[in-house]
Amino acid sequence: MSLLYCTSIYYPSPYANRIQIIAMARAFNKILNEDFILGGRSIILGNCSKDNEKISVVNLPGSLHSYILSLKYLFYLKQNPRINIVYAREERLLFFIILYNKLFFKLKLKFVYESHGVPNNDHRLFAYLVRSVDRIIVLTSPLKRKILELYKLEENKIMVAPDGVESKYLNYNVLKNEARSKVGLPIDKSIVMYTGSFFNFAWKGVDVVLDSLKDFDNETIFVLVGGTADEIRLVMEKYKSSNLILVENVEHELIFNYLKSADILLLPNKSGNDYSEYYTSPMKLFEYMVSKVPIIASNLPSIRDILNENNSVLVKPNSSTELTLAIRKLLTDSVVSIRLSEQAFVDVQNYTWDKRAEHIIKFLSL
Image 1 (cartoon, one colour):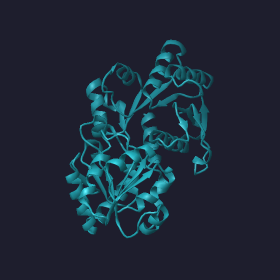
Image 2 (tube, rainbow, N blue to C red):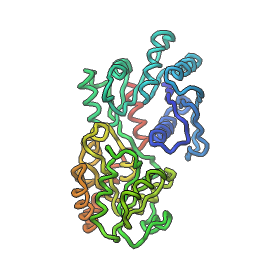
Image 3 (spheres, helix red, strand yellow):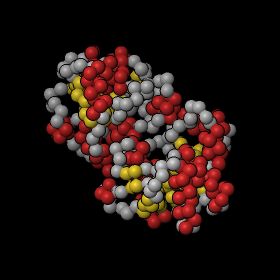
Image 4 (spheres, rainbow, N blue to C red):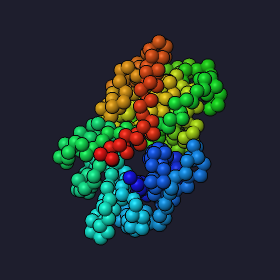
């Protein structure tokens, strides 16, 4: 097996999809070694590879358009006939690689699509893609059911592989007060934290968290990590609260000091959005589980793939009232908080990038 992971990305980049791609590239590379190649438009790993593994990278700069980049990939594949698997998570890019190969190149390749959702409107391109590829990787079981229902595929063509976390963070131990000192947060307050982008109130649920501010005094600090300067300015204008701290995007390597400094971590995804309810497998969820800090999350099908009543508090989505009650419960019940966080840490052992890569490669070998 020799696998080319086709992307159109630039890296380094703070975006979650780039971080996920690079994490999986490292994990694939540990198993396949010289039989793994990562493709992109401009990928510079530098010191990003903390274990010093050498990842083969092919950069294909130029046009962002998928119909052009796909041709560049096919010419590269033609020059490297040992590669027999093309892996991609970008719908249009993989579509054109398959189409051009069928029409012009006729290379003997196995195509693998990592799907992160089903389009809301025009299904034709997506339908062609899922019927043409050899294997499909999805992040959640609801997404698998949706694809099977819509496109009448054989069930054994699709594998559920949730996102994950780097194995090294399983051993990241820092005391709460030490973590707070590192990131400049108050040591003598209760801290409720959300990490991630602020930008999409339609489903991220940041507005639900902010609506809970009024229910707490200054002894409980809400910390939101991950906004842009403009997003922070807009939030501060709307929510003038003395118990709110907003932090701009931080380097991914630093996020665990923030997580370790919290008393509660929030995953407030909203209902009413297909991506939120059925498709997403948030990387921060697995980072939360590693932190050994109790989690409050929305009770949604996508989230219940990983979380349950034994490793988290699940609350009604879109409700700041329900969120407030859950926060109060965990802040006053240390026994429950410890039990939930310890179980989450046990459960996350099964969700590392390395294990995800192992399961996927095994699936592709069938």
